[in-house]
Structure formats: structure tokens, C-alpha cells
Image (cartoon, rainbow, N blue to C red; front, side, top):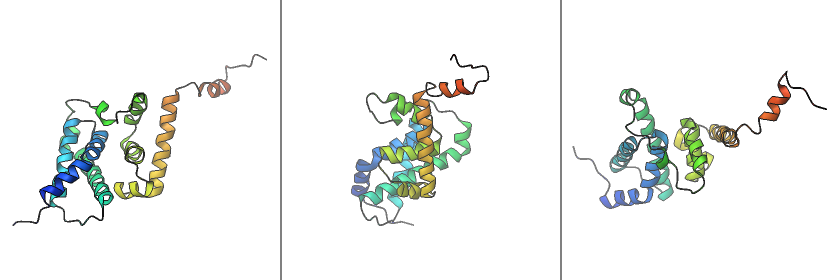
Length: 179
């Protein structure tokens, strides 16, 4: 039973144009180079076998990123994934190489998967909330909420406790003004 496969040229072009985005998103979601490479391979195997007629390069990229999210979810749900520990943690490779922003990307990596994915797709890949909603299978309002929660957590994480201390001092019962 021979199915129609996409041409090698089409697949090579897609890998060259969008392979980095697929790999980075998988690495961002899974925190393991080996698992990200497995997902990368699975995504492009699915593309090879898929018969979708893509309107343009953006439609193809959106399809690839959606399949990447699905493959990551499938891997995380698998019994094998739940019972094994990664051989190496590769958080430094999941963040874009932006000098002076290491603390920010470390804080982004600490976010839960749903928030981290929304941040990644919006700020790194440049997608709008409607497009992210279509890729992740949720409503646009949910994406906006996730982005809001992520920004709020990042702000608290990056600003530290300096902003929180005056509120805490004012609400502590043992605190008295020195007027």
C-alpha cells in the first residue's frame, strides 16, 4: 500500500525554513534535547505523509508548530515519559541567544507549560492571540489570560520582593509608624 509522499525538495525547504522554530518550541516544552529531537523528527515525518494543501509559508509554519505542540503533549502523556528522567537538562538551548536577558529566559523556563508556550509563540515566534489559540486548541481569551498571568508572574519573579516589602510592612500587626 503506497501512499503519496511529499517531495524531498518540499521537505528539505520546510526543514530549512521552519526547522529551528519546531526544534526550539519542542525544547522549550520538553527541556530535553533528546526528546526535542524525537519530536522534531516526528513532526517532519508527519509532514512527509500529510496531504494538506498549504496556502502559504505562514500556513505551513502554523501547521508545523501546532503539530509540534501536539507531539509534545503526546510525549508528556506517554507512560515512558512519566517514568523516566531526562539524561540532561538543556534549558540554555531553549531560550533564544539574547545577550543580557539570561535572567528573563530563566524565569520564562520556570513557567508552567501552558504559560510558557503562549509566551514563546507570542514573543519569540510573533504570533497573535487568535493564531496561538488555533495552534494550542483553546480560545483567544484563554491565550490572553495565559499571557497576562505569565507577564504577572515574570514581573514578580524579576522584580523580586523589593516592591512587596512596603505592603507587607503596612499589613504586619507588629509594625508601627515612627511619626
